[in-house]
Structures are given as C-alpha cells and as structure tokens.
Amino acid sequence: MAANGGDANGVSSALEAKELKTEIHSNDSPKTLLKNDALYEYMLNTMVYPRENEFMRELRLITKKHTYGFMSSPPEEGQLLSLLLKVIGAKDTIEVGAFTGCSVLATALALPDDGRVVAIDVSREYFDLGLPVIKKAGVAHKVDFREGPAMPILDELFADEANEGRFDFAFVDADKGSYVEYHERLLRLVRAGGVLAYDNTLWGGSVALEDDSALTESDQDIRRSVMAFNAMIAADPRVEAVQLPVADGVTLCRRIA
Ligand SMILES: C[S@@+](CC[C@H](N)C(=O)[O-])C[C@H]1O[C@@H](n2cnc3c(N)ncnc32)[C@H](O)[C@@H]1O
Image (tube, rainbow, N blue to C red):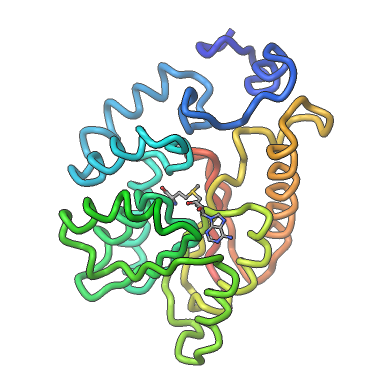
C-alpha cells in the first residue's frame, strides 16, 4: 500500500475506491504526481520551501485560500520555470493562463530588468488578486497583462510581423482543449531554440487510466484533450520534447526550426 491509501496502481485504485465521479484536482489534494505524500513533503521541506522566494510564498498562501486555489502551479514548478528561464537567458516570454499570477511572478522574478512576460487570462479578477504582491516584489513593470480569451490575443500578437520569433519562452497553463491550437501559434511566436512549456500534461495520472474509468465528464474531456496533445507533440518534428513528471506533468518543447 502506498502512503496515500492506494496501491501500486496509484490513481486507478484511489479512483475505484471512491467509485463514481472523482475529481482529478481539488483543494484537498496536493498537485503532484508523487503518490507518496511523505516523499512529496520531504521534497517540499528539503528543497522547495527553504529556497522559496518570499513574495512567491506570500502569493502562494493568498492563492491557497481561493476557491480555485488548486489551479495554481505548485512551488516546485515555479522554481523549475525560474531556473529554465535563466538557463536559456529568456527576455521575452508569453504565459497563457495566468490565474492569480504565481507562475507569472516566478517568471517576472527570473527575467532581466528589461524582460517582459505577456500574461494572458480571461479573468482580470483572478490576476488582480496577485497583482499587489507582484508590485510589492518590484517586478510589475515586467508584466504585460492582457485580459481575454488567449486565441485571439495570440492571433493579434502574430498579426504584427515584429512578433514572429520574438519570444524566448512560452508557458501554457489554460484550457487543455486548445493546447494543440496554442502550439501552432506559439511555434510562430517563439524563436528557433526557444522553449514552449505545457502544464498538466499527465492530468493527475488519468492519462494512464482505462477509457471507461469513473471520472467526471469534465475530467474525461480534459483527459482526452491532454492525450491527443501528447500524441501530437510526440510526433511533431518541429520540436525536441521531453515529458517531465513534475507537478501535474510538464512537457518541455525546444523549437528546432
Ligand atoms: C490553471 S490556471 C493557471 C495557473 C497559473 N499559471 C499559475 O501557475 O498559478 C488556468 C487559467 O487559465 C485561464 N483560462 C482558461 N481558459 C482560457 C482561455 N481560453 N484564454 C485565456 N485564459 C484562459 C483561467 O481563467 C485560469 O485563470
């Protein structure tokens, strides 16, 4: 038996035990694919929390109180983004799905002073919750928030020739059913050699469940979208890709040409 009460089959057994319509994500469960809670705690306590930026921590705790706080990326993911952005020397980035701004703040803190993150979300209300912390952290000047559905905003960006290949990095963490279409647009906006990162690409481990598993209709839809996206990326010759079992699954793509 694993520490979370499941067995070697992890998610599958936990879902079956609860029978019908178990939600993949909720505020009651940590956003990690590590199905051993003690191991996840170990990781948080030894590496993640001791190195957590004070403003990232403040925003994480504010976000945690939100009804949809579970949508936020966990702190180890913010640290991954931060390190990655610094390794590739990113200056201009795009984020699709900002929510309260945890990953936007991680990005803005990692960018140079003249760097910019174009952060897109349908809801300004969510973003406004985190904005005071972003301001307090002294990085608000690096954040270009755009309110609205991402697709037309990406199209608008692309309509300006100057934006073709202008971005070094993109982080996608919004409606999973649109990931394939976001990928097409972002491949034109991110430069060759730049990185596209996609969140939730293992969707709570549900990608490994049987098709008829007892999930909510919404989770079934997302699971199908994520699986279609993963199959597309695996066969896409335009990118070099790696699937990381970090957080809820992160797919990193380096644009080849
Ligand atoms: C998982 S949350 C993002 C979490 C955030 N990246 C973080 O690390 O805290 C997903 C966000 O995507 C936004 N969203 C969903 N569909 C969208 C769309 N079509 N266009 C823009 N934003 C969208 C939601 O409003 C929500 O805030």
